[in-house]
Image 1 (cartoon, rainbow, N blue to C red):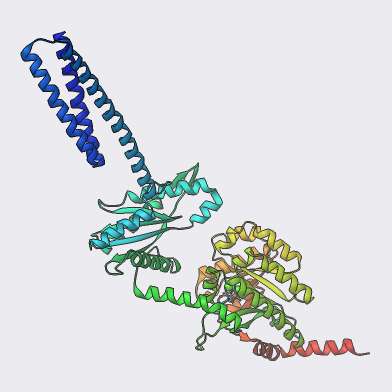
Image 2 (image 1 turned 180 degrees about the horizontal axis):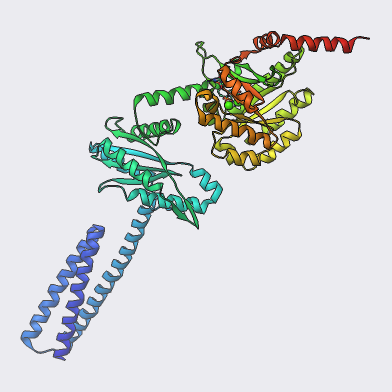
Length: 541
Ligand code: C2E
Ligand code: CA
Ligand code: CA
């Protein structure tokens, strides 16, 4: 009985000691005073047990009461051990869940990189501690095309791999986050602008190596905008905004990387201002349509015009279409501009016909117009109101990437063609899929881009491109306009190559309607006299 009682008490002390160790761990994790008191209590138990064990070892006798007491103490120690064990496991599980939740709240589930919230918190810490840093905003080029064209699975895989490759170029202490769809942010504390530029370059080089995704090989790249703290602002928002402005600037200027500079935000402000002015301009009738004559080379007469938008702002300063049309396309205001333009063209057609000129007008359409139902509705309405509208209008579409993205540009153009409209493929040769567009789209004509025609007399390569484009188009049964003709020599070369029509400053810039009419009637006086005589003869009894 003596040996049994001693053994039980020793085991009890062991249980209590491990219970105390677990209670200490719980104390460290919860910082709760209740668990501190419990630890103190367990320590007192251990002391009490040890005293009982000591007296047992000295007396060497055990009566029934003492044995009963040692059994109770033993059960108590098991109870303490079990309570501390279960509590520790539960607390650890809760702790893990909380950690997981915290991780999820601060990380992007797709790439497992820190998310926008985490990024803002990190940048906030740096700003609070006044630590200088470079912040790069990375925007994946043509991501939407991959996502739309190859499916979301491929898009997701590409984002994961881009995050992975980009992270591999960062130094210790740098931080990368995915802050939105295809936007990543890299924060580099205590680093110079040169370092950031190098990293941006390295990331782009590595993204240009092929990715293997779902059996496809594709490459990628990013446009990078850089903002620096404290140079470009004193808050997270200001720095991210600076990087955003720089990124947007790089994108519109065809650069891969740009560091923020104040002229960029003036640019951005101007764009915002123009975008706001567009609505007002439509309301106040500030837009004007000018007409640039297009000459038929064979007959040497004006045979059509291109309608080109002109806009003087409130202060009478001209805003070029290249400026405001791009902004209108980005802000979806282009459809309102096109609507205004088509109504104006319809009324100008009547004036042309009244002046005896039956030359069609080329109108420029944006890819966004082709995506909206409005265009087809408006064209049908105008065709219904004026029977000559269809024959008097040629639709110019540009081979931009946006046209490639339209789900079925061919079917819409097919319908427009069935209505009787002719279609001209503008800026031919500047997109990356001119040939496939030429094959797939139901066009009637190509307009060779002015970049090939300009200075053609001095550039053999341009001559070769133009000559081959003309024979290619003729082979497919299309006619050809060369735009941007500025020299007589160019006219002779184009004539030699068999180009059908020419347009450019050599003949005339775009003119207000009245002037375009007068210019045409005086330039082609002979032609119009003959026409008049012919009409008189026909009318004579
Ligand atoms: P685009 O359709 O390629 O129009 C030809 C541009 O070249 C016009 O510039 C015209 O003035 C210019 N140009 C004509 N002949 C010559 C020449 O001999 N040399 C040179 N260097 N340039 C010449 P503009 O009027 O500034 O228009 C620029 C662009 O804005 C147009 O390019 C077109 O894409 C767009 N645009 C103009 N009006 C409209 C419109 O009503 N709707 C839409 N969606 N876009 C328009
Ligand atoms: Ca055009
Ligand atoms: Ca053009």
